[in-house]
Image (cartoon, rainbow, N blue to C red; front, side, top):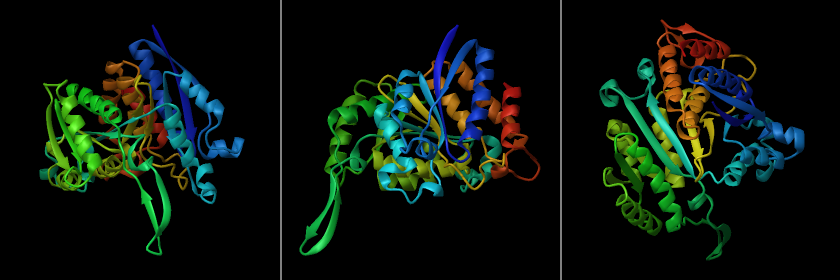
Length: 356
């Protein structure tokens, strides 16, 4: 029987509530598919600031490095908004990504059939189903490039530098091609190669890596055209690979097609495929403690963990199927529609467990 060591970073706001429900579902999946999970908890974000004075304690980094995977709830809230940037909760999130070498961000945009009506796009645009995976480079590009302020012709100016090395591009490209191989063998590379030199190197490198994956159909789009195509004809996409800044924007656009941010999971992986898994929504401090948060994005993040880091694909599929079945009848308040049954955060966790 396989045993996995998992670190829980419950974080702030609704984080503890949604993580508790995801753990409940993971325990049920472990029981059903004959593996075990050991849990350890650590502090990250605002709760870490309150307890230790910093958003990412050294103890948290050490625990996460020793684990098979990490599950994160959410961080942040107005309580800490007046702190300097390096001491805010979000700095802890950036810090743990860097400490664990999490360079590949996987953001699926999936519409479950019962939630199609929540999408801002018409049924005829969405089609029968929508399942897009955005693979975003997470530790390079303009967010991590040289930056500063200076004076130009007597006027204040500021600059941020977009730069990628070939090895950085190669490793994210390989992740994307591997994902495409396990899906529909179709990959769209998104860049701005008609204008940016960094994008020209990006495209050249992706094309070279493509030779290692002759079964995958590769095409290219400029980022502005991709943004348009996502709302015009999202069904044309399967896997999208792109840089940090473009992925930041496009993954948010793709996620909104699904109609509810409360349903969307994400994974951030390193070269060993160990990862940090989290819902893409925020900490929602305005509803914390009320029992009405939607735990499904966190539960689906656990499914991603089982698939990409823990090598338990059958358990992952079972959780996804249980979520889809639950949505036919039950909804948390954020996705409630007339004719369905409104349930609490805890009740939704119990329902998914029962359907497993």
